[in-house]
Amino acid sequence: MKLNLAMAQTTAVLGGVSQNLEAHLDLTKKARSNGADLLIFPELSLTGYVLQDLVPTVAHRPTATDPVFKPLLEASKDIDLLVGFVEEDIRSRFFISAAYLSRGETVHVHRKVYLPTYGLFDEGRFFAWGDRISAFDTRFGRAGVLICEDFWHSSPPYLLWLDGADLFLFTSSSPGRGLTSAPALGSSHWVDRVLQAYSALFTSFVAHTNRVGYEDGLNFWGGSSAYDPNGMEIGHGPYHEEAVTMVEMDLNQLHRTRARLPLLRDERTGLIMREMQRILNSKDAFNGR
Amino acid sequence: MNPKHPDLTINTDLARQILTGFIHSEVTRTGFTKAVIGLSGGIDSALSCFLAAEALGPANVLAVRMPYKSSSQDSLDHAQQVIDKLGVASLTIPITPMVQPYLDANEGISSFRAGNIMARQRMIVLYDQSAVFGGLVIGTSNKTEILLGYSTLWGDSASALNPIGDLYKTQIRQLSRAMGVPEAIVAKPPTADLWLGQTDEKELGFTYADVDPLLYLLVDERYTPQECVDAGYEEGFVNKVVDRIRRNQFKRILPPIAKLGQRTIGYDFLYLRDWGT
Image (cartoon, rainbow over all chains, first blue to last red; front, side, top):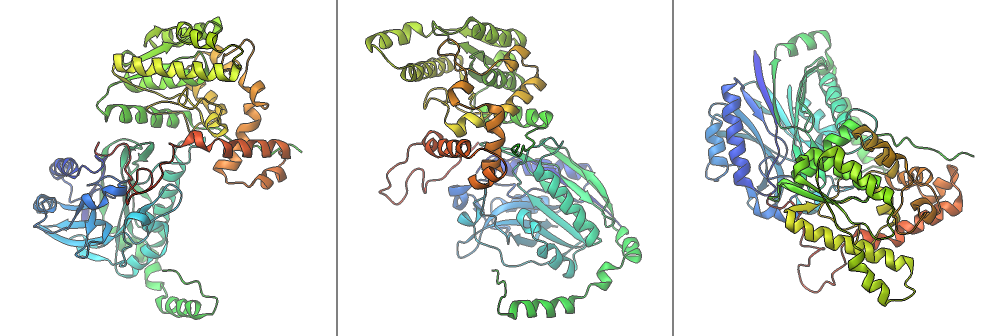
């Protein structure tokens, strides 16, 4: 089975949801006519990234009655979509979320679980922490979604793997930083390394899309990329430019790679549970959130 | 002991791509298409002008030369070289008739005060010309001078956007060479050109070659002052630089507003400038 996956690296009007929605619908039409089965958009693709006090004014719910999601769900009848948005729950907590839409339904919503609040980042000030990491079934197999900082921690991809994900869909609004003599920024260099490592360690498909454009002095570097279960790069978008990068994923590669390299078969989850309990129960335990 | 020398080399193609993209984005998203730059004849404004011309097209950039009567002919000539090489629009507006009456009315005025007056007069001209030309004022301050506070508040530090403020002086030289800024401008000693023979390095008391690596360790790499001393930097030099960075913080922020209400600009009324664009 083949999956034609399109990775959109888009810019955004900061706080301009209706303009951004139009751009999403345009790109969706184009991707569909180019034969894409699934089109993924960056983190907060419908809103822009450094929202600060705009957060409560750009929030939506991924339902058919929502004016933003209604046309997106309609568009998802022909092509699966992953879109980034600010989600407001029924108790008015605001999350950085990504919704997977397929055949007119919201199949899965991931709420970002790691909100970077250090250096140039201030997400924890404006957003609630997601508290669930789960895989979900798609018409291309079981998938998992993570948003930017989520995959700088190795545990969320690991949990998705154990929950059955063979296709990792990662999205970012990653500000470019770390200019040296190297041909790529430090931020993009490290993301590519991490993605490649996950694809090899989890013998799975990984696709990542990151936005482009500027917000005040911040630049976003794009550079979407995809890797196969052997850890080989199968597609890479340009840096710093709007683009839609298509990759063909031969999903049978999962079978071939895992026949050769049974890392998933040999994973010792019981051992991990025992050791995790021992570590967390010890009196010097490192107790995170 | 030779002090630790971090590598400040940058990939100039990447810097050029990001910075021209920044100028284009931040000028056009506010509805403008043009930019105005005060061209001193020095390297910083030359580089900003090169970047703006590439980002917006030379016809959309206005370079303004604003000599005072004691400004050197070299400065004017070097600015002209930039104008000629890029084909940008240009104006020459001497500031002597504007500042001289005030200077004459203040007998014995210090060169420090006179320098600030000239820098602020140039700001007035630049912002007025930006209204005529319909362009935004592009900043020309580099990271070294912003950190050291080597600028005039609301004078040369005033701009609508600054493409080069995260580049140290030594990196400005590297990018300038890569973009084709005339070598006479790149190689000459940086000067505010307020009096004959003035140079930045004489006035600061140290060279850019010495201070840039130290600033990089302190700011970018988060070294403590003691770690810089341990890395071979002279203690008096480290303390002087650390003190300058702290004392000049006021030049790097907007004036603090005294909070009274529930929501106060600067504290809990938070929006980017690019809000809605």
